[in-house]
Length: 117
Image (cartoon, rainbow, N blue to C red; front, top):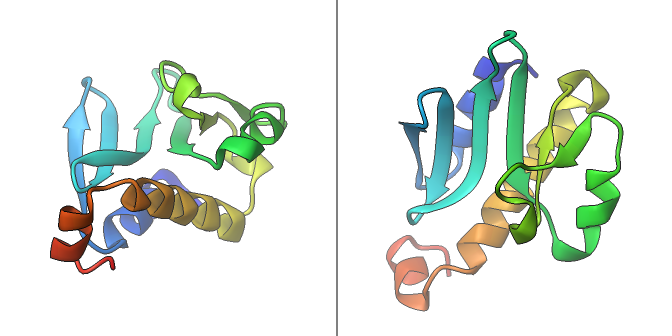
């Protein structure tokens, strides 16, 4: 996937909103909680960060092309620094899983309002 495809996929998830933050990052949220961050670094290389299941964090953080996400690793986020190291279907599945992990932690009232329950 390229950066535009990743951004379109993130934006296509139900109730997902995007906002440009920190000058270069596109942050995707559900209920004002981040589930993905997409950006292109100064060298022109795309990166995407997202939350993973707590018990899988070390597995992904040690995988080639992945690193613990700067500033977010303590919350079990990883960053894909080399998109060639992951297939499109797997990347979509991981971003979607991040979306669901974050959505599940929203308040019950908000999940009801967003029709997530």
